[in-house]
Length: 190
Ligand code: QAP
Ligand code: CO
Image (cartoon, rainbow, N blue to C red; front, side, top):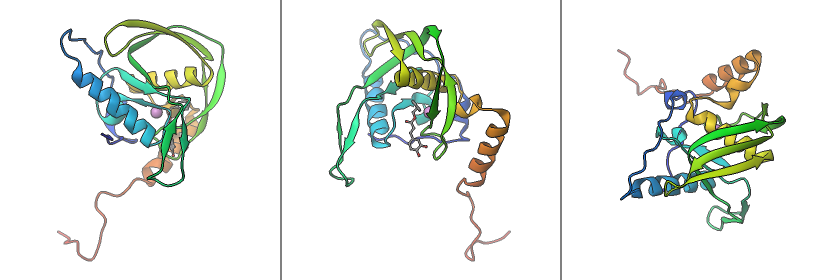
């Protein structure tokens, strides 16, 4: 199921997601959420998605920085070479180096700016079964993990830009927002 992606300035993007507790007998709900988040990410298409972005305040993110889209039309579209990564309760253990990467975000559509991130990170997380795992990431994957972990703490990539750039982008985004109540000749003025 494709979920609705919440966009700036939706307050859910500013809230902190809560740790996921594993229920030994059933995590069907969590499996469904992970599957739906992946489907939503591929459909967008995007390379990462955090639960906050689909309006759920749980510490789970999905990432795939390797897949390719094949086919022209909406109908014939195929996603090949998929390497989905599901990270639950992720935590950065070690970080080093620097990388500048032009980031975008499905929740901040149409904006892409260079952001400074760590170029290599080690992280711990849990998989869908609740098993503790560790991962070393570098390059684009490291950028994606840091971007998605920020979402879980209510942070957006635009927050990491200079004050002047941030102000300009926020102004533009608010101005381009669809209006809730469009005036029309059918509108009854009170
Ligand atoms: C986060 O971002 C990320 O503005 C995921 O019009 C960013 O998938 C990870 C997207 C950079 C690693 C590097 C953005 C699609 C997708 C847009 C995304 C747009 C269409 C962003
Ligand atoms: Co994002």
